[in-house]
Image 1 (cartoon, one colour):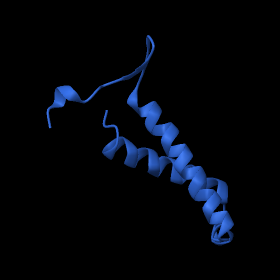
Image 2 (cartoon, one colour; image 1 turned 90 degrees about the vertical axis):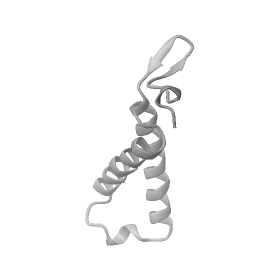
Image 3 (cartoon, one colour; image 1 turned 120 degrees about the vertical axis):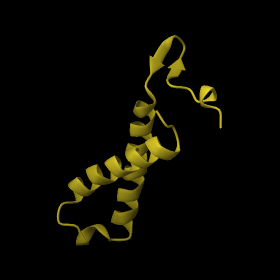
Length: 72
């Protein structure tokens, strides 16, 4: 794959955003969906601190999205 085809920043109008911002937003959305599913299927009762699990999932998803979806 040619490296010049991968954008190094995202833009909306005339405002440029780093790709990590989109990765973090998608990671937070994916972590929220995962946390709601774990609450629905009562898996979250096995977690000692569910809010820390949400933050950890957001970090993991953000890292995965930044590696595979929008590399910076």
